[in-house]
Length: 150
Image (cartoon, rainbow, N blue to C red; front, side, top):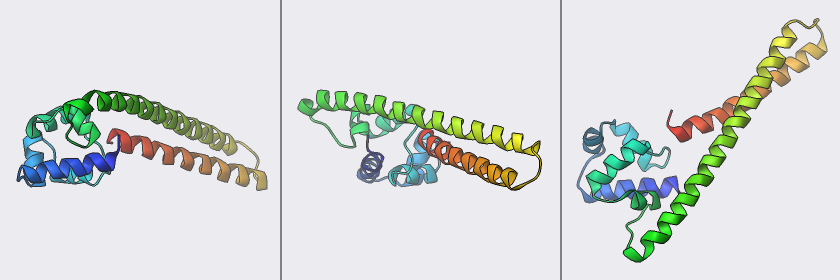
């Protein structure tokens, strides 16, 4: 699934329906800023909202996830591609969450342990390394949160 392509498709469908972002947002219960984020490819609609978007634009979820209108010939092929891409994306998101948890947890543990260490250069270096690990964990967590829409 290509977020940018899906976003462009949502924008195209909205314009074809002669709707503003605010009108579309009101129709499905989100803000116009949320619609803008989708159209810019920064975020994906929640799965519950995808169904509502499809109802508004009279398309199916396969077309929404493909980012284009599909003919009968392309429908089955695109459905299979979308399923495979969805599973791959879920796998990558889980991996990033595990990395985030590892770095944040390890960094926090190391940082707490430095509180009880005697003062010195080692304590400073280990403390800085622990903060760097927590920062890396937060970076991966922000990517995860962006994907799930938090």
